[in-house]
Image (cartoon, rainbow, N blue to C red; front, side):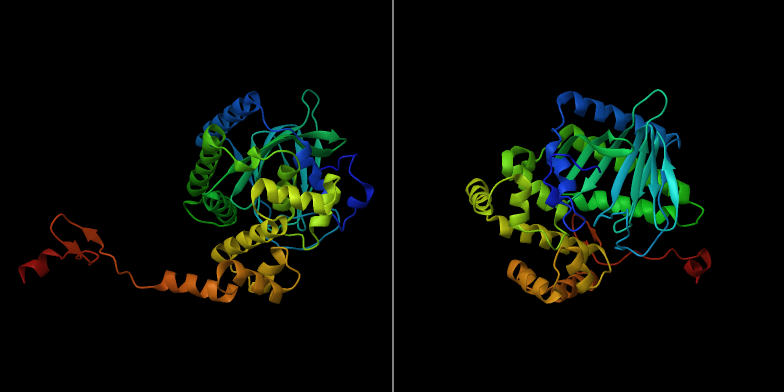
Length: 352
């Protein structure tokens, strides 16, 4: 994503990526026409997937979370659908290009860089999906500067079932690298399901984030985009928005009834919970990935919010998963059946 030229210079360093995130709230929300176009794009993509004409690209597995020059990574998967032109992706172990009618799933933590190209007849354009805490974003990307993408229009959607989107993306990435007789069929089904869910949320989705206005909206965007950045502070956000930290804190509290610093912690803890539930990362890795530079401090904040430590929370999850089944297997109108059925006996066994 390119950097807007009106971002203060001190916010454009590698140590403070807020300047790069300003494009998220500088871009306008999608219009009715944008939504209609996005629905048509997903409808077409679903038809192509059904005919096995929508190619999937997934980078090879690498050690997640590496900080490499010229690359960046996200805490959750990222979805790309090529529309016009070409995207050249660079990864630690490979490079490949994304062309029109191709889908790329970049798994969480995989470092990557992007260079984009228009073709001889069409300007560059991609459709990009991102995942935050209980929020999903979709945006059209265009060529803002030579070979550099930026956000044309963006929409944030409330997604209480965000884990389903993330699970589908992760499953596509995992299945892509496997070998098996049903691999292609599984990939096809997963991709159609993911595209269908995107299509539905564009049709029916709304977002509380979109109902916030002005600096509150912008502050929420920055927190959701940068929650894994341990250097993110109220002062940094205020600087990026061109106001004082005291003014922003007061405004945020008046409009949301929640303090901005508490909102930042809550978003980070929500992200940590998703990681505890869905990954095998250890507690320190989850702490760092959630924006905490000190795992011990992370444990204290987690307990303040959830009443238990991260280790205890994960142990409770494991205990629930391993708890013996206590519900009946089958419910009849006059009885409950706790068995899993009776194996069919051979004719010889029946005679004897």
